[in-house]
Image (tube, rainbow, N blue to C red):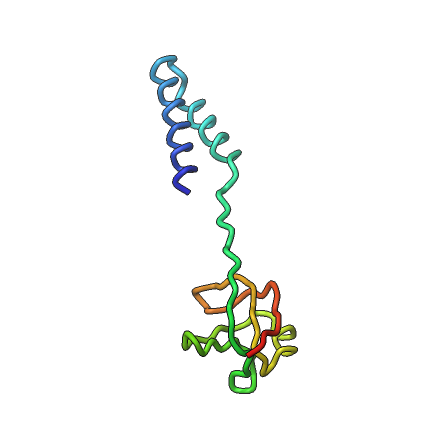
Length: 114
């Protein structure tokens, strides 16, 4: 994000220098800067895939969760059909954690030995 911001600032500095030196009209400057900024791709933060270990349990008989006894935490699992196949089993879940909801976006679940 900082890299993108620096490139925007550098681009704006170039246009401002051209305006001051060459007498470019402000209207042209504004349009040029807007076009240049619009053409740059937005930075994409790729979420990190992590591995979580624990046991798939049922929360109130309504929703499957991953219970990590070693760290005394539990996580919601986004794919309930996939989680149901591993009910009561120790597993490793590879996925992306949404920290706002404590939900793991499952990429893969594999059974492990206890």
